Image (cartoon, rainbow, N blue to C red; front, side, top):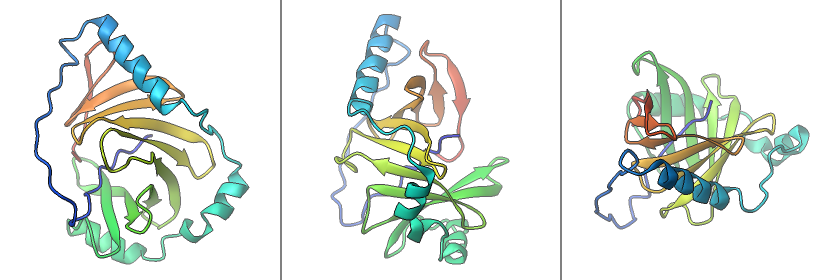
Length: 192
């Protein structure tokens, strides 16, 4: 399972306005395949690590294996808070948004990493953002705590993300709808 958290940008950032057009359905199959290939080449160009040594990963992220502020984060997210003085927050829900099952924390002193915890405060996933984050386009690689690459996402805008797993294209999110490589709607999400 790959989690997409588009966390709010710092309040001090300049607000840019613009429009996004989504032409996935009107592109030819050749154009869609070419687009997928170009994005795959961008996010997998550096021979990324597909499996970290589990023990080395746990040593590297030892301070984050357990969320010491679990209760505070749970309450803040449950109350709709997306940011506090030191962190950006995101909740993930099941059953039409009624049951939180996971949450993400991005510390403002390290915006290139997001930590995903289960409700007991145990680290489950780590997102590593590319160096141009939070400016679009950027990409992220998500790792399970076991060290395996769970998937990668290429963000072209707040509204549009291309999702890959094992370097294979899974779909493109546009707002609350995911489309496959043939431009067929395959999924919707409620946390957009």
